[in-house]
Amino acid sequence: MPAPVAAPTPAELATALGATAPIWHELVATLRADFPGLRPEWKPTKLAFGKVCLLRQKDRTLAYLIPRQGDFEVSVVLGEHAVALALAEALPDTTKRLIAEARPYVEGRGIRFPVTEIGQVSIIRRLVACKTARK
Image 1: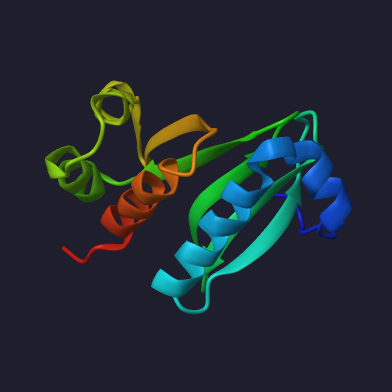
Image 2: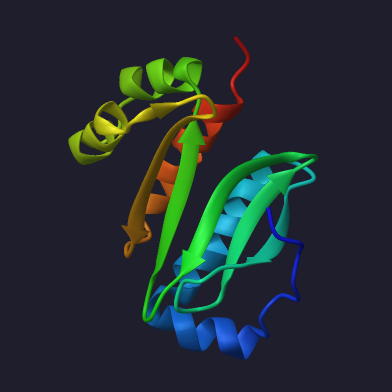
């Protein structure tokens, strides 16, 4: 994975996120409260914004936040144990369908979706909780 890069300025991030900036900040604050030591780490990418934010706890990436023009996407990679837990959760059918249809790789099943509503913070929170649940 590429080396870390400087975080965007708050103004750069706000411009990219548009109306979803408060959702981004709520998501990061919520996950920081749930997962002590969580830290954002920025990496370069070929996507439009040029950077992606990894939310990491110790050496583990819990989620990827991908700024776009006017919103952002979240990506979470779930191992098979986490997949089973997530499919048993009270998650929206669209989220469960993403998980069930995701191609399994050695590192897990990656799902990615746009974040446009504050209510999605609780969905992402539950996905990350499944990812970090002990077997």
